[in-house]
Length: 101
Image (cartoon, rainbow, N blue to C red; front, side):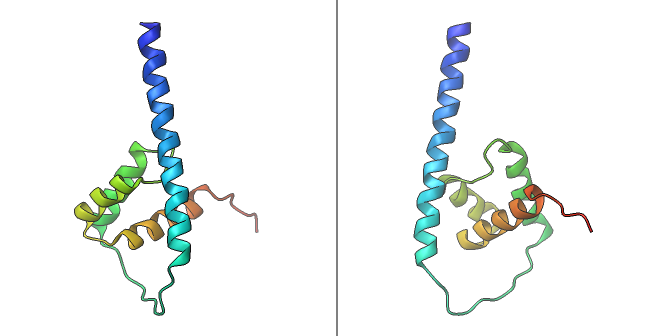
């Protein structure tokens, strides 16, 4: 049983590391692409619920992989860029320390 638990943990750690590498790869790619125009879009409640549910399931490492992004684009009908921006904004709001007034 202990061997099975350690193997499971090792696979889990490998998956987290794999997702981290994908995240940094995507960041470098997206930083090279710049849009000339920016439009503000309101994301619907249904899409926000899908994204928040994904976050709840992935609290340990809240960065979606390429495969996760593809699945989320289908479920939410948002673009990959919209989803990446939403996750970035959400993490910045949720995980940044609150300043005292």
